[in-house]
Length: 291
Image 1 (spheres, helix red, strand yellow):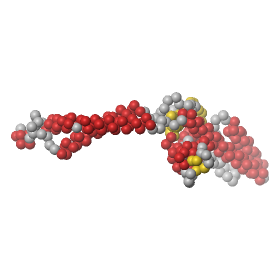
Image 2 (cartoon, helix red, strand yellow):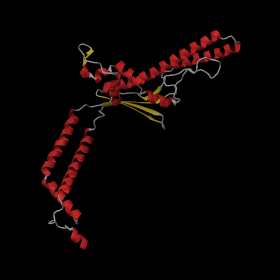
Image 3 (cartoon, helix red, strand yellow):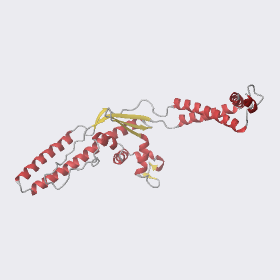
Image 4 (tube, rainbow, N blue to C red):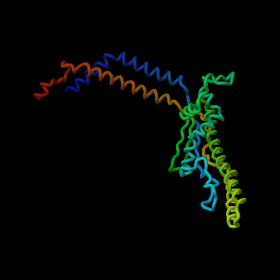
């Protein structure tokens, strides 16, 4: 059969070129192994938590107040608090704050930072460039079924990975709390101004109730041990590297290289020649038609 003859011809060509194929295979796999051994090793520190309902000082509907409900840092979209908190961990505002307070820009662009003179060589990298570098090292996932929020930070230093993951949790919680307190204080100040201008006793009594309620909510926000997150597993210093998985990558590259070599040899044979008629089992077109 033609297929059998073609397969035998391909295998003969592979055997003929076996030295070259093995040499190419060894070189490719060797380069990959060398890259894996000399490349950066990343450690992963994770934090498992659940988003908490965001307690906010809000105005009641109606009542003759001149201002609407107090806006929050996340407000306006009508999204659930757990979705909003999960999205906030990837926000530009929080990422910029983490980068700024931990000095991560100097690590991202260490080649441009002069440690002795404490200044940048040339133009300082932009915040957007630093955020882009940070996005490669950060992974946030939220499971709607379990309500679990997982934060993962990948870094070359295990201690630094833990510190950055911890900073995301603490600064994220602090930022949302500060925003809620700021809105609460603004709400209370507005109620106090309304009370000073109130002329009807019923309106004044209503405003007094709203003021009492707002003060109580603001006190609760300040007193909560954690505002936005309930941490289940805090970030820890990782014991083992997370990336790269050297054994798995080496095995995959070895198989893919061998498969690519076989494909190239088969393509060369099929493009450059036909099955040898002298091969056992070869059947020509005329013989095939007669059959």
